[in-house]
Image (cartoon, helix red, strand yellow):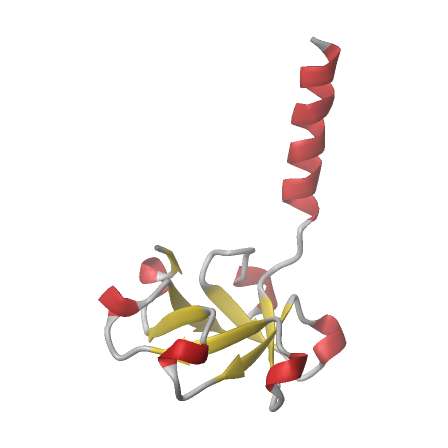
Length: 103
């Protein structure tokens, strides 16, 4: 019983302590955490992304991204590729916050 309680508290603390989805664009594939291919169609994407101007709006794996100019501040360093086969994440950028998320 105590083990379940500690595990539950640990999961909740971890969930609330994770950082926002702050993203840094890098020019080098070797520096990137995610190699991204931008799709033309929502149906092809693994994640639908909404770009926000406010860091406080972004959340982990929500698809709401805040771009930073500092790599040290970012949760992800991303590199954009022209080739779908190189990517480990396919994204579609949307103009609507309500569409954002992981598929």
